[in-house]
Image (tube, rainbow, N blue to C red):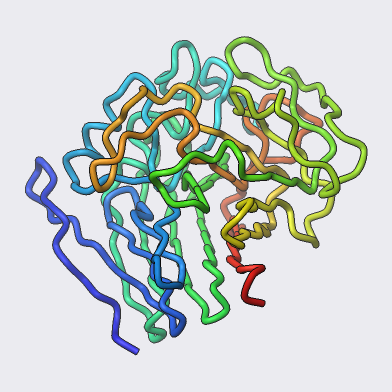
Length: 340
């Protein structure tokens, strides 16, 4: 087994160097990360074809430019300190009202402009050649959040073709947190469409939202049996919904290719799966290998808490106390049904 491959990936405007890190398992599966945004840039499945099943860019400049778009795609990046929207960027904690940065109209989205997705993370190689840990410290008051937040993000690639993500965080003050990853998956390869790939969810309800994509607090039913019914065409059209996980002890979501045998199983300790299918992406966005991405190029399975959770008492709590540790543990397991 070769050690982790490390290469220079580019230089930030302030002169800091960004590096790429390539993990491989014994089956020939590989995953590449870059230290900017803790982005997962490639995920190549085993086999002669070597399918790269995530969307991304070829160079650092494209990642930097994409974050300045009206609707940034967040290709492959970590999202925080709070994933999803917070209504008008306002929440209350310990009888104090906090105003966060508003970077999406009147609302706060994905941690604001000074977010995890735009941060340069520090990489630490682990004793395992198939594991890497990124760390980041977010000062108190960043985007209006209380508490200095210290985060670690460990990605592990197993010989069973599992990509495991373990995110942990601690704060010097009581704060709120909701972290997720923003990988766009396509089991046919990043140059294909996900239109004909089936999605199943361990959920029967999703969060109703208003015209600004803010949860109203109401749960809408879309099916009767978790994991038994394929996601409807009506929901897939403009898919940007938060699904309420029915059973966290089981597989929470699957993506299946209709013909090449590949299936992705998603398991997480999070109470929700936010699915996003690229609506809002500019048509013909130039991605890796010159591929023109479009609104059906990939689908995100963002395992997280509910958006706007601090403003809905009946939603799972997003409060992180200063003596606690926040964890988001999510696994993406790739199996080929034709070669089991």
